[in-house]
Amino acid sequence: MSPAEDAGAARRDVVSLDGVTRHYTMGETVVRALDGVSFSIASGESVAIMGPSGSGKSTCMNLIGCLDRPTTGRVLIDGLDTAGLDDSALAALRNRTVGFVFQQFHLLPRLDLVRNVELPLVYARIAPRERKRRALEALERVGLSERIRHLPAELSGGQRQRVAIARALVNRPAILLADEPTGALDSATGQAVLELFKEINASGTTVIVVTHDQGIGASFPRLIRLRDGLLEAS
Amino acid sequence: MFESVEFAVESLRGNKLRTALSLVGIIIGVASVVTVTTIAGSGTADVKRQFETFGLDAVQVYPGWNQAEGKPGIELDAALASEILRSLPDAKAVLSRTEFQGRLARGREIQAASVCAVEAPYFAAMNAGMSLGGAFTADDEYRGRPVIVLGASLATALFPEGQPVGKSLEASLNGVNASFTVVGVLAAKEGFFMDDWDRSAYIPYATAQKRLFGSIGASAFTVVAKDRAHVVALGDSLEAFLLARTGNPEAFGVVSPRKWAEQDEKMTKTIGLILGGIAAISLLVGGIGVMNIMLVSVTERKREIGLRKALGATRRDIRLQFLVEASVLTVAGGALGLAFGMAISWFAVKAFGWTFVASAGTAALAVGVSVAVGLFSGIYPAARAARLDPVEALASE
Image (cartoon, rainbow over all chains, first blue to last red; front, side, top):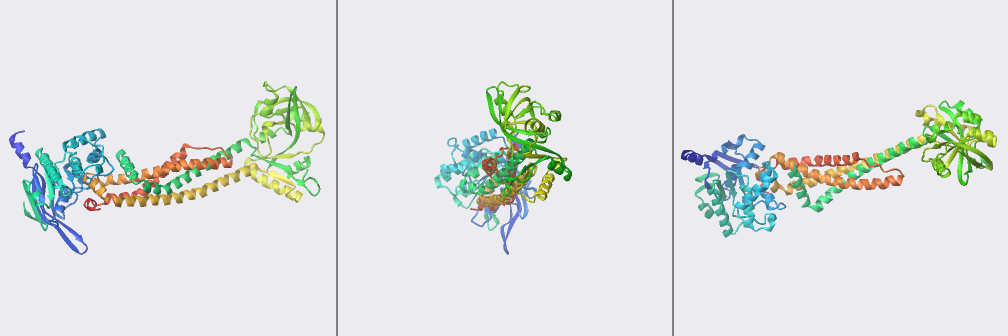
């Protein structure tokens, strides 16, 4: 690959919001969760989206994660306009392009670690043997090669979040999208999780973390600040 | 698909008590379906067996007992026989039969047996087949030949070495002794009413009359129908005819096996209808129970549904998951119902004295019904799960 092409690839936007609004109707009142926001995130960036509660950061995450669509404006994920996609195309985009990490881990309590991590591959219709191989690989990557046949309840919070990160990475997504990933962890464990995100970003995956925590926000190379549904700083 | 079944089993195992309770209706429903079809199947097979072995195409007439006068209520003689033939257009023939208790001896083998004097067409009218030799003929009757047909077990007892046809034996009937030549042996045959075919012997009616006893009255008439389709009507008109003649319903007995068989069949059908109704209601209730459980399950697992959607599950995937879960639930119930139903019908069939007939079709029906109920009960909850908004679902408790 020539240096020019390499630079071009690095600049390619994986996320692009253009004049995005998202309004909810709650009874009589209209809630303007996002009220005209535009920004782009290039492939390989490491970004924190920050703001107090009610700032619109969760709505922003849902739009980037293809769980929701804007009221007006355009959201492009990996170059695709989510407004034009039907349910199965959106599901496929979530499956291949976005890896979710949640504050509460969201592991299925009755499945062991390997089977939890395999879930995205089930929906990608990958054969069982290959699924298992990739799940073990992802678990190794987050430093969990043992206890892989245990249930989530048998692990500590930090270990559970690592399983969730392995699950987010298993389908090799372009974007790792984390919602308050350290919110349920003590600070030391949280720090280790953020270190893991750095490693993941170093290997080329775009990392986007949504948080209200100033300290965490400050540790990211780029910070997108939202307040009252508007972009405050990027 | 395989994953869906696996997930379904996992999630059902997580709520064992609830799963078991929600299955009760399905178990009862499928058990009734299985019981209905098995009992109906065995009952029909039993009626068929009667049709094949008993003289269903003939009606038997027996004399009753006139207590006031201390004699038989009706005389089964030649005059009555010809009057029946004249009056009842459905009757083709009236065959006389008389039964004697006697002894048959061959060298040192002596057997007590009931010896029936019958007319030659009797064997055909009663669907009695021969395993060796043949029945006696109209010519044997005409000439009053001393020939005899043996029931299967009687033949074995008297001729342990086999080959009885053509050999002779001594008979002692009501104190009269005579020598008979064996012309045939009956195929083994189940008895009906008072008959014991296998332990009986048969001699020509005319031989008994001409050679042994002079004039004898018949102890029963076998009235053969012209058309087998009219045999039930023949039985009814015989009853009416004899009642008009004697004015006393106790004076005679008319046995119409076909009528009994049809009543049997009707009863089987009625039992089938009742059980079928129970089955339908239980399946409906069971299906609603499963639907309810699935709706509760969808509500409880909103977060799981949201997560699965976030990880790439389409609406179709979610719908399939809950449909499969409902079907796994009902098929598990169906399997238990099948086992219970088979056990219940086995006892019922034995109680009726029938032969137990279990068919693969019944098992297939049970599984099919279970899957159908599962799909029926799963459609609405599955659609609800599939429609959930992933953002809301993930945020729910």
